[in-house]
Length: 144
Image (cartoon, rainbow, N blue to C red; front, side, top):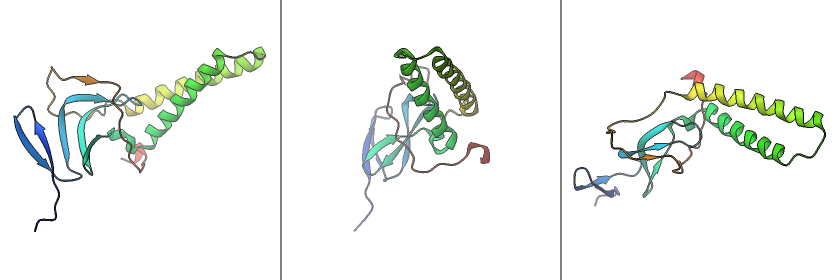
């Protein structure tokens, strides 16, 4: 008796069913863009019985720092939008917003150019708002 479980997916390009083992990787014909760092990928992983797409840069601490900086930046924008306090306080928030913008630019530069695309043609559909799954571990990009 075979204890291995396989998942069957239909390959539209090859017009045939393919079997994948749990945790197997496969490439889609569509391109997916990470909503945090903008990295493009078409690499999917079977996670149990569900296919998931991961941003390959999500493994890095810098990806988490970028996500946190983006959330803080948006919070500052909302705070400024509804601000009713003193001018000095508003100036501090504007300065903090500027520093966060510089940090976001620096982190984007550290992560750019690391797309993970293979076998993509010019007619590939671009998916910008697809929810990426998250890895459970982190490492520093400088040590790679």
